[in-house]
Length: 341
Ligand code: F6P
Image (tube, rainbow, N blue to C red; front, side):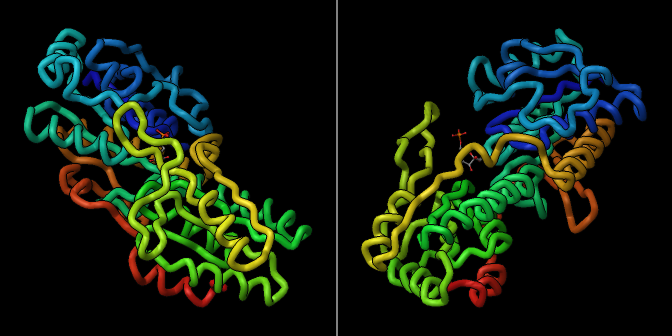
């Protein structure tokens, strides 16, 4: 088989490990050849691709970003499925492995299920919000970077007897905040799934201060306080009309300072969380998903994606995986409570 492989949507640590895993297995176990599609669906729509052999993927699994480039090009733009089919015919491509988040996989599912294109998927997002898989690669790295940041600012917060509000990514879910907050020993963890009041936040901060601690608040970018209408977006919309979240830490810090009298600073981690080398866990998960995706393509399991179930690699229909966001469940929120304040 000749297989096209592409990365689409926001980048994330581990993409290169998927690509390497897929190419190594495809070439060595099945005798396939590969083309790297540049910048997501754009590469297929505009016939912008290059040959990917085992030499091209040598030593890349520890590198952040994606050697293929990425974009948020919509698969139904620029000629859509008909154009893709034409390019695939001309190039002799038998399958496409699409690596991406919810938007990418929803598009890939449609292409496979409604248009009959030979597409399989690999789930990716630092937000860990995809259904059909227990974890996505990139999440462990993002949470580790956020944990490291909490550890770092804690020493300054302690020296100055300050409160620090640290904002992490995650879009509409709180997985990064939850795990980094727990790992970093935060006194308040604020996530979109379980809104709390301003009064509760101030109480957690005061209680930590009363015990002689420098209060650490970890807030997910999508958090909205109880009885408040909308998320904070200091940057407005991106070029695709998506809300660019960010700024809730800047909103909260002066309120906390005013209400508690404790000097408070905010810090937004932003894209730091998506960059740099993937953790060992993410490299292994990404590699295993890459290996499995090639098997899916080899078996013509169009419309399916590789996923993680417990410690096993499984496969699910992409259309099912994108049906609803995987939010932090109440059990994870409840067990955290005794650690706050
Ligand atoms: O989905 C990954 C993510 O990093 C979110 O956590 C964040 O809200 C968004 O992407 C940022 O997108 P962009 O890189 O387009 O600003």
